[in-house]
Length: 261
Length: 148
Image: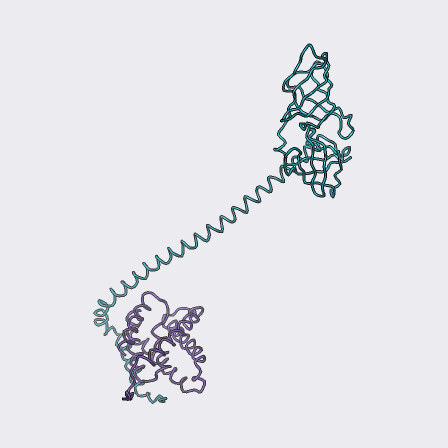
């Protein structure tokens, strides 16, 4: 490797540089500088413009990529928010149901256990079972409406026999301004019940509410069983009958309540 | 040499209009580190003038700085640690820092080394290897004879 015996060259160039600096400080190099700038300025401008155009293209690509990522992230966030919103709405509905239930059946008198409907076939399936203390024949209510009776139990779920079930038979009464009618509410195939064994002299009309008599023992007296939709009356028969429809659709319920004691 | 001059001209224009790094100085230092010789002084002087012209600095100032820094590189090259390429990186960082400090003094502006020096030092790494390959493979050396 060569050593650096270049001090004379270095010194000469340093001196020339000082000379150039000196000349430039007295504006002696002004004219050649202007002349060269006629050549260099357009090149610099061209490079600068090209750089800016290129920068804009890169910025666009970067922005598009960023926007795409942001869009994806926002969609994820939106999904989470919608999910949280749905959860909050469900909790609110459950809380409202709970409050409404406590208004109707005094928690000091009835020990109520909340349950969620998880399916309806012949029986209404709820998410509470023997591990939650559910026992056979317990009544299931919503507010002051009777929904059914527990007929089968597993560890974590139970089946509830609805009043419209053909096997359901409840002593009931209806009441209106003219008086009270007693009878037996029988489940029918379909979505209706038949209020049977009503004496002819007992008043009943369309729109009357039908309540539980409470003689079965597992449910309190005065729970709503349904509403009279049609009165069937024949002079030749001993008893009157009435078609009764449930007050609401069981599929709309968020929560139901088991009366444990 | 012609290729090197063309590249240095291009880098001078790029440095003066687009890229805010001292690319010319980096290349000059790397060449001085890799291929010592008095042509590096001529290049430093000439491109110092060109950079001064393009950046509207007083003519001669950049030449002085570049010449001084090339000489510093030669002095460093004479030390035993210069054989290790890794020790070249601090040299680049120091040289570029000196250049920035002198430029700041010239323009009476505050000295801001970070992160420009780091970026320039990182740019110098691939440039060094490109230059090394170029000088080894594509530049004909005097005294090389083809054996027939």
